Length: 109
Image 1 (cartoon, helix red, strand yellow):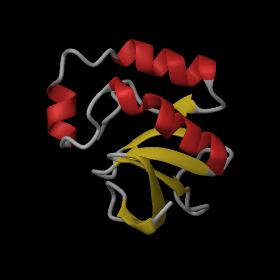
Image 2 (spheres, one colour):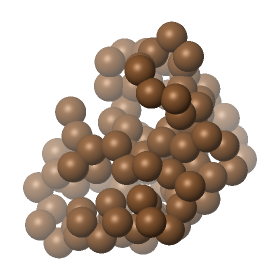
Image 3 (spheres, helix red, strand yellow):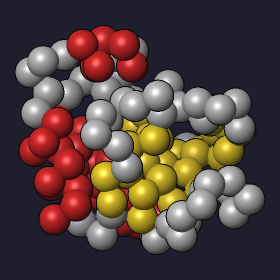
Image 4 (cartoon, helix red, strand yellow):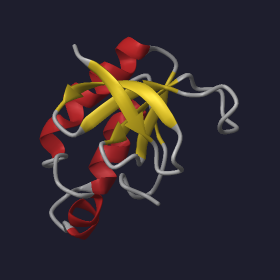
């Protein structure tokens, strides 16, 4: 899997992988944020979707949610997409993985 620099919504640059198109997996900066997770799954726009403790778990989440929507679209397009079942996405991440869904909207500001 290729690695590259990924810029978070707040401008922080991290090294990330892309296990599924449009979805990035990257370590959480220990000086950034206030929760105990060490890995995040995020949208290519820099918005975070889910967090977990292991890189393998984050990559699994990205691969499994790849079919929920076309994550290569812009954050605004996904936000406006009424066909994306956000509740199902949240429940699946929270109940079927070692991850935690981070926002009410998967592409939250």
